[in-house]
Length: 314
Image 1 (cartoon, helix red, strand yellow):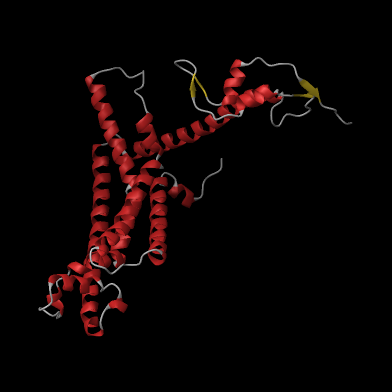
Image 2 (tube, helix red, strand yellow):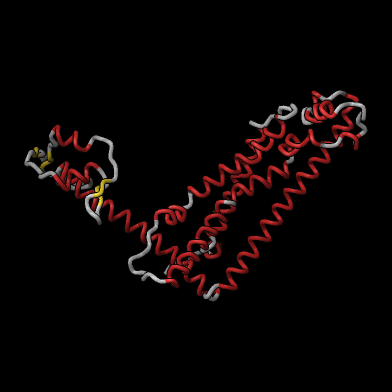
């Protein structure tokens, strides 16, 4: 019996943690490239806030939606039906609601990895925050002229993220404003990281406390579910391949990989047309579907005897 190396044994069962770490690293790299090539503050009153918040929030929202879409559990939750083996009852209904809430929480936790990473890294970087709120800093704290109007003060502050637009006499005030805003942004970023870490830790602790399984039993259950899914995927791939092979054999007269093929079937023009259109999942009866046009043809059409013999060379 072959034993796995220690590092593989350690990593087994931690696929979720590894996947989350990879997602976080990719998000950090993407954020850095995005900031370097795409972000350029307009330095104009009224536009800075919209531009900064758009670059801060819109990518996070997109990453959240993608996180939901790429999780198989999302589609299980959306398309899943109540099992006919489960009897109707108040207890089962309550249990189903609890299971739905648990699965939805798990999906949301996985989906939040990328957007939270994006927000945290972006806040620690500080550029988006500085651009968004620079015009709202009080100029009086930095030696500004108190005689200027509020609109003029906002116009001056809105130009602070762009050093080339700031007059030389205001360069010191600009540096102090930028330092203050970067401080606020980085503190907010680290607080967000701290809140997320504490929340995740407490969630795991509460889940472990209320779990009916012991630590080793929970590990066994996790391994069982993982192995069952792998075996099911392998069987599903083989089953669908064998099922599709029957229809391909009926259409061409032989199956891929066959040896010593003596004859091949010549499909008619009508048959080519029958399988060449756009396919939709078609309901045959209450229990079965046609998965493709070839599938529909194979179940309905009788096979004619237009075969061509293949010459064999000795």
